[in-house]
Length: 123
Image (tube, rainbow, N blue to C red):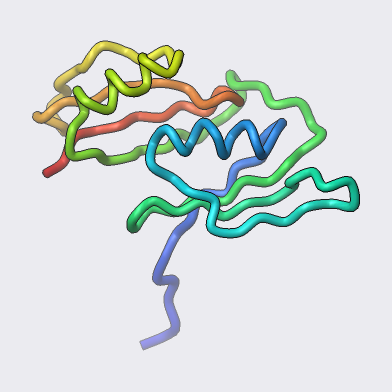
């Protein structure tokens, strides 16, 4: 059998890595590794939350949410509780929806750079 990929980690370009680290910490992610430039500014980070990982890197290019052809799908064990937590921290979050693929419920929000996050409850 030929060699195959065994893991996929989304890698997003963002306007401010430290701001994104703070946002994703609301979802349970922690910065496991960061790289800084000569001024001390974080320009790259590896975030981890249980089995979920995300890499972030600074970009000078404008980030246009309407041109992003990717969304992040996350799972939680308590979609209602997570929704309340995000709302309490000033994040705009949709009402809980129950699409056919996620009977337990799903919410939608955007990160600080406009990336769409869908978060479904899976037990």
